Image (cartoon, rainbow, N blue to C red):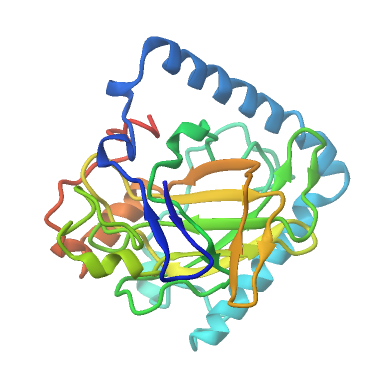
Length: 291
């Protein structure tokens, strides 16, 4: 872990690339069994909430919120909120929209279901987390890459209720060429660039709103050796917000990672500056933690 003091000039570095993101190859049989059991119960707990959430109209509200946010983001970027994303009539007419998915009914809700996130043990937090981050929504700073807007919704699967407002959510991820800010360590880009220790790009913290929502403006994460593109997420139940815009906590309630569809990753990796990375590429299927 890297800990940044409330005073930015005081830093404590305690990182090792060998324990940053362990793969299944370095986990003991007992650790692998523990992770599998954790994921099984987490999935079961999330599934058990579906009826309760559906009865309360949660999915309808969630869909409306996501649509409103998507429309607003498109307006901000000068994009139409009414026209289909595909603007070529020939392309649309020449595309088959027949789905091979089975088990769907006329009233099936695309927002219903157990979700697409996989919960992972706290061991995957890694040493690249920086305590004492800035409270801010826009974390991309001057980093080049494809614009991304992260919209998270937190649900307490023990109560099947959305979390209360003001739960602080911390996210951090590497840049387009696989480098984390606030860290100087072997395996994190050019370990000889000392000024990266004081960098703050692509990490920040925001409180949830009523309904358990939190958003961040960032870029799509790049890759580095041994890991597929991902975003780290850490939820804090308590902490202190300081006058200099930083937040510091002594505890956390959830730690996990957000992953992306492989087709999307492949398309992003073909663009600049992602395609300039010299680090070896790892797919979702090859990732030791996701797998």
